[in-house]
Length: 484
Image 1 (cartoon, rainbow, N blue to C red):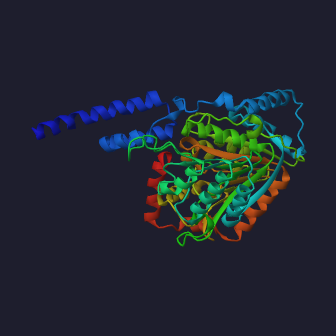
Image 2 (image 1 turned 180 degrees about the horizontal axis):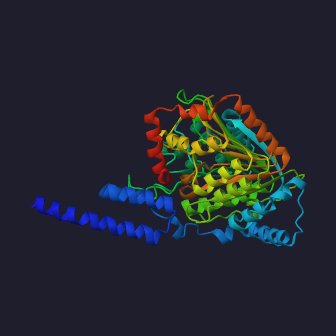
Image 3 (image 1 turned 90 degrees about the horizontal axis):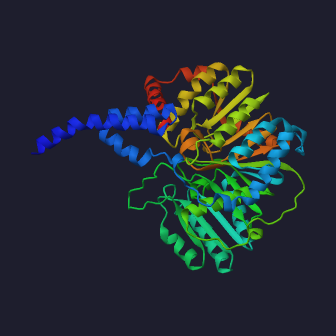
């Protein structure tokens, strides 16, 4: 009986795999590279591939994820409509002449990501985890009305406990505390860590949690954002999560080199909107605070122009990736790029290659030490054509490089949570600050040049001396890169 059953299953498995493959091609309408990667997996491993797809391959772009978009974006939409009309007429006033050359990028971000340009921001740049974390705790201690925290990872360690204890103290004082973390990113967190915070009046929720123990059908779609908003006036955005390793306390990685921003000004409004939208997904809370508390009026001297751009698997626009590509094509002199994972899709890869062949000084910095070996091999496979064309590649060796930054011509830059890979562009919920003006861009450029002193230059000659086994691993990783 069992042999007959197995024979019947064996006969039907190829048919089921073929039908499933057809469904992926004609119904999902994914990126072609992603489609071929899934087809290869389904046809080579019919049963296992099917199970993996159920957990990792769903397309959220057709699903209604956000429920509160119109209600929470009224202020942003008013600014967007006004700025869009002024930019179309050519009457929009840019505070710094250098900003105007990026007007097409600004307009694209405005209409595709509902991101008005705010020009009254003060920007502090952090490259050290200890300084960033201590500053965040200081801002939390000074909070008077509300604290909104969203991190992909909150470690079940000393650093995680310090954050939660700081939030608990403010909750006891009557400050409204909302803490959101990613359920998979914070997989090791002990939920007892949050009990005292909840008892003190704080609210804590996971993002896309498992509804059935050990079965998360949205496993592949994670909230990779790192956002903190204090009283609607101070905002944090960047690459640092909450955990000991981000403070350089992990002996495996050593020093953790990342980039994070603290913002004062109207750009915080857009961070606030994004947090509230993500909060609405995770919780059933009906917000009762008045808009004036969520979005207080601020008066700052015009300084740095900022746009906060979000993207995620709920949209097919890939707003952050499009912003990166537009920045690359607007470069005239230089492109400085830092990323821990360099696995670009064809559009990003070709944009960089065209920039190199056009005589642009393209410099790419990735970590020498890997934290994900398969992704590391894939990253090296993409460097070949760029090195051959004349790009400069640096391997950061003073610990682990986790920064996600791009600087163009010392006049525009981006700092955020999105890596240069398919996962960040299509699968994760991400957020990035696009910054315009020579002040902050030149600061970030100087930081990059300082990092070069702690990096090894990967030349074409060194690249060619890789072992045969390493090259084979890179080729295999390259084939799987669309679904890494």
